[in-house]
Image (tube, rainbow, N blue to C red):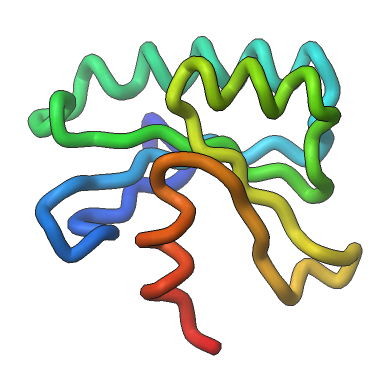
Length: 102
């Protein structure tokens, strides 16, 4: 597998979502994730219709939330260490949240 997660038609409107998972939202991990997402997407057959997201265990610091928002990369994180509830922010979050089980 060349990437962590690819959700086809995640928004029920034909767009796909490519997700790169990193355990920690530190500077190095986020920078690597950004590069990986951009690199992986260019090999996808539906690259123009593929949105990007990074999943971490905890919410990244605000300065990185701003950077990722500027790059139109959705940020996903778990609400608590048990990884039972997902939160997020960004372009894809609303559509993804609507499709998650309650």
